[in-house]
Image 1 (cartoon, rainbow, N blue to C red):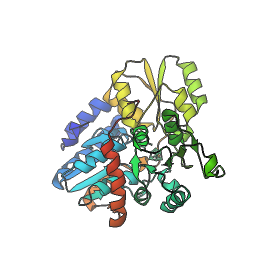
Image 2 (image 1 turned 90 degrees about the vertical axis):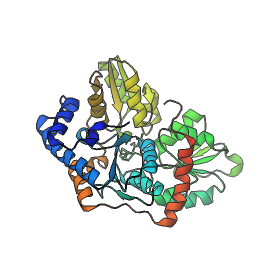
Image 3 (image 1 turned 120 degrees about the vertical axis):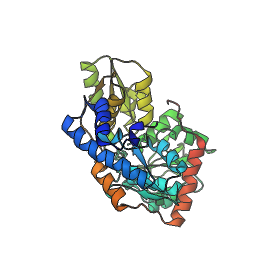
Image 4 (image 1 turned 90 degrees about the horizontal axis):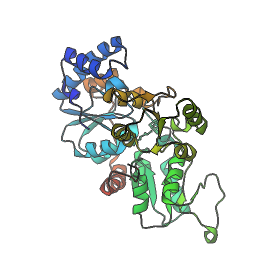
Amino acid sequence: MTIQISNITDPDEMYAALKAKLGNIVPDVELFYKSRLAARINRLKQERNAVILGHNYMEPALFHSIPDFVGDSLELSRKAAQTDKDIIVFCGVRFMAETAKILNPSKTVLIPSARAGCSLAASITAEDVRRLKAQYPGVPVVTYVNTYADVKAESDICCTSSNAVMVVNSLDSDRVIFLPDEYLARNVANETGKRIIFPTRQPRQSDAQIEFEMIGWHGRCEVHEKFTVEDIRAIRKDFPDVVILAHPECSPEVVAAADFSGSTTAMMKYVERTQAPRYLLLTECSMADNIAGANPDKEMLRLCSVRCPHMNEITLEDTLLALQKTQYVVDVPPDIRERARRAVERMIAIGPVGKKD
Ligand code: 13P
Ligand code: SF4
């Protein structure tokens, strides 16, 4: 998706454009202040020959003003691989910026905050993966892109929430190691009909007894693990006609109780192409505002105000500083980069959409 506002460098024009999109969602004083910052960022972006990539979880004023491209993890990886700009500014979290560097090593990749981590990426180390590979020799390793580069370097192929099922099905193996998100692994196991075990929780079985096909890890997204089936029951009681969408990082019980599950972009597209009286997203809460801004005719319910604290680190102020000071430069050591690149490129070659997209 291309956002034309990303070319606006005049502050008053930016204010008018943001007001048209977000006038009903963001307070006027905030829009005015942020329009000044956004116009300066777009001017500097042009002067420095930079491209800005923005994840779907960016706060509404940023999301609708400065990114040249917005999208889910997979779409942004593809854009990072294709850009001919000198600088990539990644408005997202560190593992995403690392993926951009892995795919485009000759470019300068910047992330506006050095503190934008991810609970899933922090849940596993390269040494953990090496131990699992020793425990299950020859079994292909699939890692979710929500991991750091050294973990990707230990894997055979990456996946995102939009292609995880497709990636697992593409492997010519009846067993896979799938890391590190417990819930995504269980959701993929459900969709592919595979059984799953968690070696960090269950005792190892002897090979003769093995009847599983996916080997998982215990990582969880600190945002999506908060949603419960009880939340869904309560909201359906008050709004029987609501359509509920859950990100596959939610528990399998939550996904089963929802009406649709898919990547952040798959959820956006679902809302855009359907006509329900109202929608509820079980994901980072900025996304409902971002969808409402682009689709004023859709009613988006808000269950909570859960924001990802890591995505929340990325602000317009820090993005301006990133371009002014060329900070924070994201680097990946060449040996790790090369091994990680194979896993990411293998994923990109497979295709963008999963079964439910
Ligand atoms: P998507 O790939 O669906 O955008 O998800 C990224 C993410 O971090 C979700 O929490
Ligand atoms: Fe990581 Fe969850 Fe934040 Fe996504 S929402 S970046 S998975 S902590």
